[in-house]
Image (cartoon, rainbow, N blue to C red):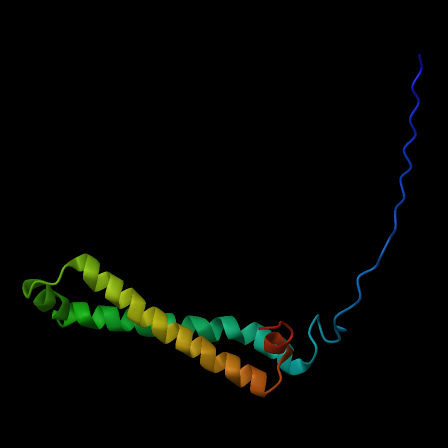
Length: 112
């Protein structure tokens, strides 16, 4: 008793279409090239503001007064994180809207 089986494999090669052509160092324009370099630094600037405000609270003993009034440190840090995170998201939203209005490809290449 002999059983023979044959299996045929078919391969089809497809190339993905190019979504956009990169002209200037991997960017669409000189403005995109500059924006891609400076946007991380713009986002990091806010961290110095947050650090300065936390140090100011510590140096002026505002946190000690709040702790003596009954505020738990866990609640303090949670509220502080949520407040500054909301401000950071608002800054990102403003920069995103400005990028879309100025038609930077950094912001318009991806769909929402």
